[in-house]
Length: 228
Picture (cartoon, rainbow, N blue to C red):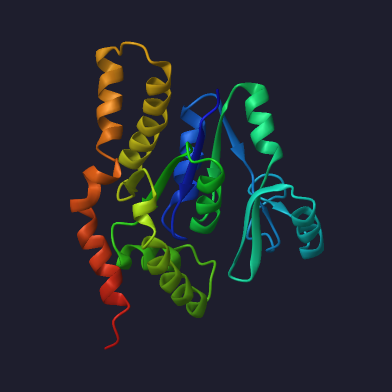
């Protein structure tokens, strides 16, 4: 039986980097490549980062009920095709979905057993620095992304796990632990000491166990939205 893992994060939180690292080190993960109507950026290639399609093609897929979820973000459509679920099950793989909070909510309504993970930046200033440093957006778009990030972060209570992406190596280890721990729970067998450590690391990322660490992050976004 396949497990569906949902990973969401505000733009610039390092989600794509973490997902790429996870895919390198954890076997039997089938990654769903989203469809989008936005234009490719930099070295992005069709079929690798996204399937780049026209608005007309995307809307045709909506009418034919080909999406598990879809949403319009910053004026562009994004969606997850149903076929990825079928293909993951055929391969006996778990399905990994890299989607925004709108899409995650749609998936959880359809698949309440899906495991959801929300990645947070350590604070607003770090997120702004990351957005500026990647040099993909204008200053106006960056400000819009920061406002959107504050809105998206309000959805954190809807996720099973919270991962604060401060240091890449640690965050990668935690994300790996979350996926492996869910597989261990599914196995129902007695755990080895090493497996118990993996489970303990994942448990530290469960929402109830992270709440105290969230307050400074939430405060940094709340303050940024306060008029001077």
